[in-house]
Length: 151
Length: 168
Image (cartoon, rainbow over all chains, first blue to last red; front, top):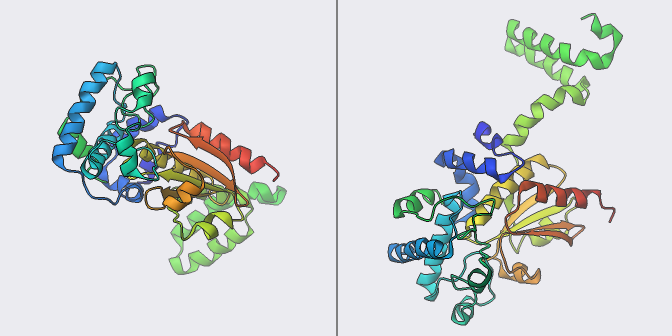
């Protein structure tokens, strides 16, 4: 554990990524516990959002994050909002009133900043010049499950 | 051991070796008191090789809530870093890893916390937080720096250093 924790202590994210994908599940347990303690979205919604993400990435010439656990978590977050609000509200924001926000639509994925300027601070859709961009526009259900298994 | 006579600071490294050899040869009962004794004499130098180990094992960013906000953040004598996150925010998890590293590296100098914006909306709204992840730095209970989004570690470190070196 100490060795693995020591490795990402780098000066840039680029190295951290490589390491994170190699991490064994137990290492993540403690840090992830903090982030997540919520119910799982339905498989149906996850599949809808997965498909949407692949299609929109291709359509907008954007790519998934080099760390696809980021992609996976965001897809699940969108699915969760789709389940609870009926719309895929951006999971990387705080809202005073989620239901009102979902109705209003500005932050429903793909949000207005994404459609207008290809800005996705959730890092689901990244332009190729972004340091975090990988070179994939596809993600499987298996990947999503695997990469969010420790949450 | 000739060095021991010349300078007390030079004694540090050789005496460490000496004690470890000594421990191996003698029974553990007798070995521990002199070793302990040697440590209390020792200036910082011999302590430092042990520190990285301790640092890696211990500190990580801990959870702060609305209930513990005043005591943990506002009343803190040392500067405080708070990462606001949301449950299904992918990039927040990346920032988390960096903040955990920073928590270990700045142990004793900066207290590091994470706050779930969904679970503590009152704090989140009080500081007008919209986008997550966002890392906010506090000194003497006042918000003094914030870093929005997912940034390289240097950004957070630079912000911390500014806060640590500022007089107020």
